[in-house]
Image (cartoon, rainbow, N blue to C red; front, side, top):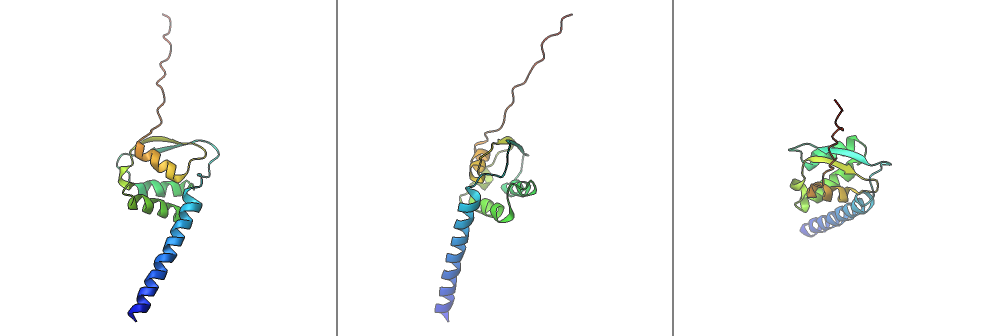
Length: 120
């Protein structure tokens, strides 16, 4: 009986590993489905799971991809490292590259334009 339970646990862990690998290879290494660069705002105090939920609402990630993305970041102890700010998601960006951008804090900065002085 104990041997059967051990065998079942081994088979389940192999199955979950295969599913996780498939999700990673087929979902997290493929670019977001966007045709133009997209602006994205991470509010102060936001968690990666909130970002994933927002990306799902914007239809950039589906549920299995978002769950895998957050779980992988947590396993790598990187989920808590994201920084608030205004980001650009360029066309061709994968979820993993976007996570790297969120962790680096490579926010979008726009130059302040001062209007020319008006003659008096």
